[in-house]
Length: 298
Image 1 (cartoon, one colour):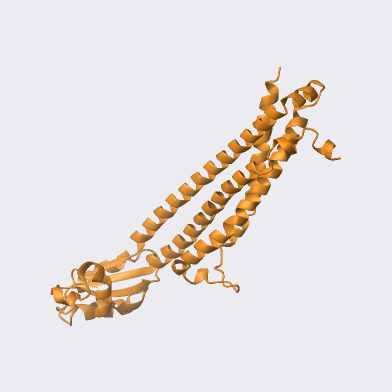
Image 2 (cartoon, rainbow, N blue to C red):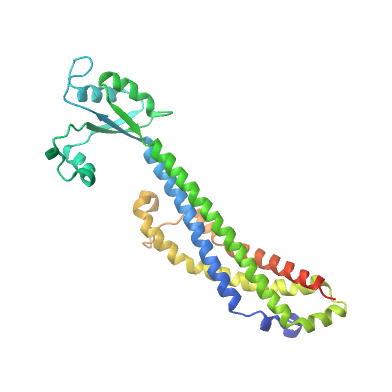
């Protein structure tokens, strides 16, 4: 039975370790690229939600009279924010909080610089559309008041995510091309070693499809084995990277019952597809290589 299933001796001419090891390395890189893409997409979605809804209102000269001379500028802005639709939880930052924010640029005690710092109020935008509409009413109450949202940062995060996804897609394409080239090289090496035997059975009437299928089956088995090993080896690295990224992901990345960080469900679906993709690459590359080689036989 063994001779009939391997009549061309492919177990000896297609090395049992070289091709699977190289494919495992390609699968490892592909798994990390897929994991990185999914992680960046999830983090970007969460950051976009957080930054888009965040409001920062700066009131210059907060103790000066407001435009209506009914009180100071800070009080007028705070009162207006309490009644504005879509604005929730306005909070005035304390002096210590402002000092902490400005410390990297101005030192630990901003008061020593005698600078006219504005009062800073944070709030959350829950209304429909853009929060830019609140800037004009606040400026009428206290001229020079600035109301900024995180939409600019959200757009930058979106652009960064798109760049990461493009890079990951390029990595996957390169990995697939390299894997196909490896299978083609290994198949050509096998053809060269078994040239005489193949020429004889081909002259006796063996079909190109039969010979190609034998090589393709062997190449597929080796690539699937390597891809599965690479995907399994990538799992500990993915869990380690997920642990490092957990502080930036918030509650969505809470640990599982075993103390491991939770991974995106899409990743558990994507990793098992790597051996399937490797099988397609192995089968297709071997078929193309063998059939092309057989057509050149005299």
